Amino acid sequence: MLADLEASPEQIQTWVSRLNYSPKTVRNVVMTFRLMWKSAKPWGYVKHDPFDGLVLPTRGLVRRFSLSLEEIRRIISAANEPYKTFYWLAAETGMRSGELGGLRVGDLDLAGAVVHVSQSVWHGKIQTVKSLKGNREFAIPAELGKHLPEHLENWRPNPLDLLFATRNGTPWDANLLRKRKFHPLLKKLGIAQCGFHAFRHGNSTLLDQLHVPMKLRLERLGHSDARVTMGYTHLVSDDDRKLAAQPGKLLSVAPKLNGASLASEAQSSLIQ
Image (cartoon, rainbow, N blue to C red):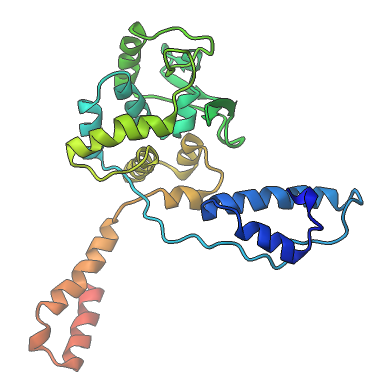
């Protein structure tokens, strides 16, 4: 703990280098202690900033998976209950797996076809949602609205009123669900292995394809920054395809052209 250190920059750097976690987790831990230190400074407990100049581990390139509409259809069609409902909700709403785990039966307004999001599950414990933007409500499609009552017919009441709970009434463990149910299903269907966040990315991409206004997309996904939402969108636009087609046309006749005529042909093609 930092309280056991003199908290010099060198000691902080040593402490960080010994944290045996992923780069993202290390950054989150350091950010928490930075905030604590920032609060302690005006109170007179500390006078210096040992985090100044701290070198944090870099995060490698991460491939973000996004399930296509066809893949989502296949997953929902092949899944057994209650997992079918979990996957369907994830795909239709774009909710985080933790938010789905914290969803209560009382959060479903079946008459109004609306879902309320106000809590989530983290390491088996109920907590508030990720941010103020995460506390939200939005409409669900009629097809899902008709399916949910069928799901509730076999639902087992539990002390927390959770829509998805173990036989003991505790929240589902998303990691176990992913490893024991979701990944085997993906393998069976021949779909690349991914996590539940791929449903969220797929939902964001679908909203983009439907030309849903950014403000509504932010509200549904619980984002406060449009740049984050755009990072969830995996779509090759028509403009991009048209642009890519231009070099393709040119290169297909490249052997017949010299440098000057190739440049002329490119300029002519782009003008068109």
